[in-house]
Length: 337
Ligand code: PEP
Ligand code: MN
Image 1 (tube, helix red, strand yellow):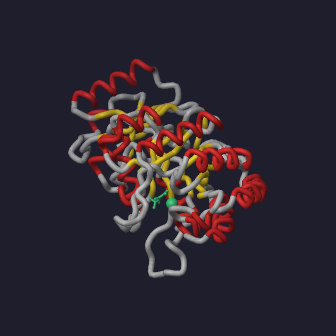
Image 2 (tube, rainbow, N blue to C red):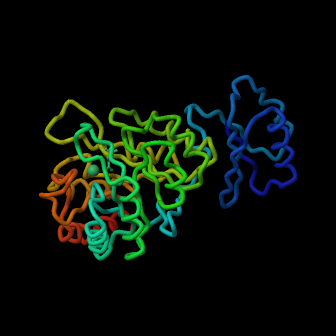
Image 3 (cartoon, rainbow, N blue to C red):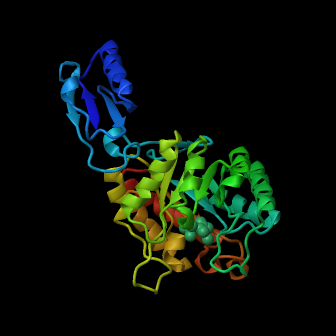
């Protein structure tokens, strides 16, 4: 349920309404626009008698929210959310690009890729330290050492770091060292992990599950937000369909859909969607054209010998060229890159 106050409604009157609702056990999510204040009511309002508020003439209207997600709902927060990741705003006019190798392989590798992607115009560095691999025999990541190497690359370049968490027992270390914590597609519905991340205030990059609907994906964001961590960025990374030519199918329609349903920023990962390096460029362009707030692109100095996802990784020169080409598209859609 949403309460829309009349423009210029007195603070005292609004607080009276707040007290009335809180006494009934509801939580209030307040959103202040240029002229109007909204109260998003969280809790089971199905039995709530709205007539108890009718007498408050500071109220313009009361609306029911159909969707099961509340805090992530655009109705609760009509303006786009801008998430601050160590000084880099995600969700504003500027499209931010996260780039780097699939996995951290050595301190030299991650630092050199970090330097190249920074030169190319990336504003955040990615690199997997804990890797969710389909096969237990595949490279599982350098783990804690990988985090140390990412920190060294951040020190060298100033780029904030993005890396994936796989279990709640690592949260303390991630909060200490990581600027944007990635929840991978395979953990999108690991609700215990999401709840624990909700207790932190570190920004979270929540990837869409392999076969998750848009609503399930936003509900996972709601899990994190329900704990008080509203710093959630969604990431479309392709979904499972009958098509096998590409690794996944990039769901471009998810971007405008999420923008309609939610105020959270959306980043697109064309690398994991396609699985093919030569498709990253056209898909990245398409993502910018349909309104993505950012991109996540895998870049490797030596893709042929990458320990993970070499086939979808761009070489640094190609990445830099792509960044140049994206600028024009960003401009056409009223953005900056
Ligand atoms: C990744 O970003 O390296 C990754 C494993 O992505 P996803 O969870 O989307 O498969
Ligand atoms: Mn990868």
